[in-house]
Amino acid sequence: MPKEFKEAINEMPFNLTVKRNALKIYAALLTKKHLENSLGYFPVSSAYLASINKRYYKIMEYFIEKKLIDYYKKAYTDENDIFNTVYRKAYNKELGITAKYRFLVNVEAGDEINVDMITNRTYRWYEIIEKSLEETTFPIKIKRDSYGRRVHHTAIKNYKTDFKGYYTIDAVCSQPRLLYNHLKEKGIVDPEYNRIFESNLDFYMEVASRLNFQGSNQDKRNEAKDLFMHWINGHGYVPNFEIHNLFRTVSLYLKGIKRGNYKNSGSLLQRIESKIWIDGILNNIPCDFAIPIHDCVIVKEQDADMVLNYCKHQYPNIKFKKELIK
View 1 (tube, rainbow, N blue to C red):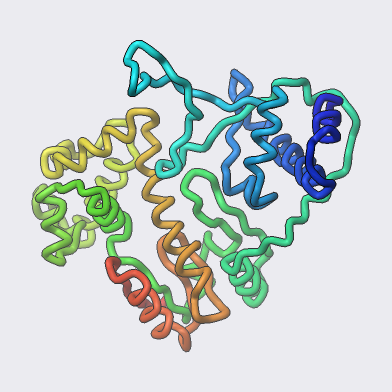
View 2: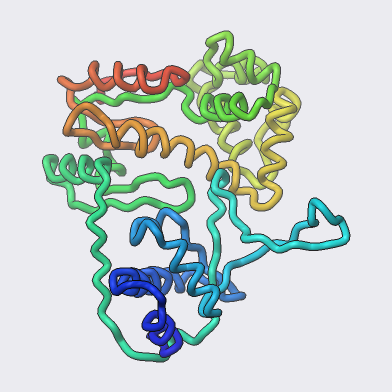
């Protein structure tokens, strides 16, 4: 730890507990430094800092005031004076654009200090996955990514083989419906896109029909899925450009949120998905065994109906189905 941080923490006008938490926040920032860009800024999410200390923002403000760290800013035109430029912290929670910080002092030099990072904060979703992996003899390795907040663990890769006889509780046309719900909340109406869900149609089969895909129903469905994923996640290319004409309003919305980064739309949908399946369903699921696989959850046969009904009750605007893993 450099002397600038040591002196600043010692001089904090707070009690010893706050100073110890400041040490933890410094250590948390340091662990993210390897992600820095060419300007020295590295992403640090508020959720990550809050997991270290709930009042992290006071410590961060203190570090900024002492000119130990700085955050990445963007220029905006002042709403009250078009000739004036204001600078604000650049982040967007909805799109998953994380705030970025950089150190203003050299952190490569200084004294080596051991920091106790134990926070005593636990999440039920983590505990359930941990116990479920242990019960099925999988290695305990669980992490959550920053792009879409998806949870990754050791049972994902071959779950269709390893969990035969178990059941999945799955969302029907998950991401297309999540996008529909998201746009509806924002008051954005695309008549053709809305018609599919308001008429209770299968999104992928309807797209296949409207764009005149050929082949078996499964082939057409797979082609529509692939087209949707390109539409959401792509840099501009889609296998069939007619999807832009079919869903003009949605396409314009996606184009808008991709303007800063083409990955924004994919990140947005994954974050909505993860908030439902991990922070919502798994955190409160009425059973002790459950393993999430992005937009579904694996449960035991005796719990399947109960979990299905629970999901339907919690999220009535999503269609769920139960399916045996064969």
